[in-house]
Length: 511
Image 1 (cartoon, helix red, strand yellow):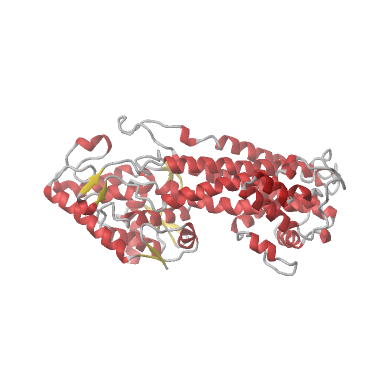
Image 2 (cartoon, helix red, strand yellow):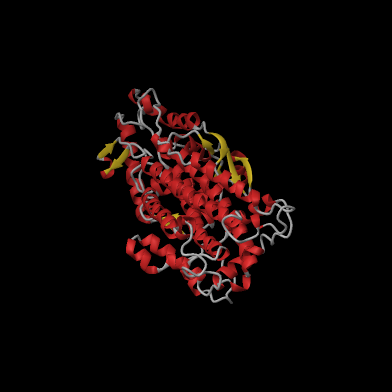
């Protein structure tokens, strides 16, 4: 059970709730803060004070006063009118993450939502009822208005939800589970949709997948080193300490651990003095991507515990302030940065693929073909990887440098952070497929070198990879191999340095 406080949620806890289905509850202190801020809202309505979003309209309508008998209708109108997302829905785990993060933000006690409304979010999590949320339609400022409106829409019993692996009418599922929809009161609609939880939930999922891929890139490139009889001297500890980047040193150390005991690697001067950059500079390039991962993790860990709606209630209602915490610029930058880092992991991987299939660059069979000429072998696998990395280059264009005014120019600068997070997801998926192609080619290359000469870690990884993709004995539809292997990579566990260093050649289940 994960206990939400509004301030202490971690990415590891996010994983436990969102990806593993663990249940959630809220701390006693958080409920005390919630009740105090709610009382402040009710006082404002009763006293007919003019406070944005409570007794006024929204956006450009902020100058329109709303009578207290209409404040509940105002909130429902807000949800319905703003639920205009379009396109394919977010993955179900992203929707679940949005519900978790919105509940956590409201528990900070700055938003004025009722306890019952937040309890409803927790109920949806624990019953695994997840709103269907279209991916497109958010500008990433004023919060993720359209996506979060689809979350709130389900709460009031409208729209559609994921449940037990299918898509259903919310009304039908609530009736089946005997759940009464939420009745939104003053400020609650605004409190539910003013936030960055769509881009942040997608961002945390992206980070989790990117971290896993970065570990996999280190291991897959180690198999490639064996397939190309790479020069291990380039990974010597002293080289990387001399530069001083911690992440670069760690990648080099992981490569050395992965290749410990291998008879397929060489020393400088045995076959060649030094390798091409895509081999020799793995620690420098992969390490730089790890630096980005560190930056992204830091920003996400702030944002998953942030108050991002407007206005915010302080000092038990003595101070109510309108601001702009809903602006997604920090996450927009983080996602754009992660896009570049993952695109580069794919770029250098594609270059290693080329070094394995190009007969002018190695002494392996041309294109790793079992019968060069009659059989094309891995020729078009490299084409596919080249296409994916080129697609990534267009997706990596920063979304955060764009802006467009909205709400009659009242909201005149926006982050496009949700677009950045969505494009990041696409780049990660493309990167995974490129790494899958590299692993297919690397397995073929070491097959020709002698798999009995591999190190314990890479040998175990090779054996498990072969359970997914068999050796190439004649041309076949390699599309199936790419998809099977990328799915396997997506679902495997992290390959931690500790796991790699403890492997002795007898241990099983590297992944």
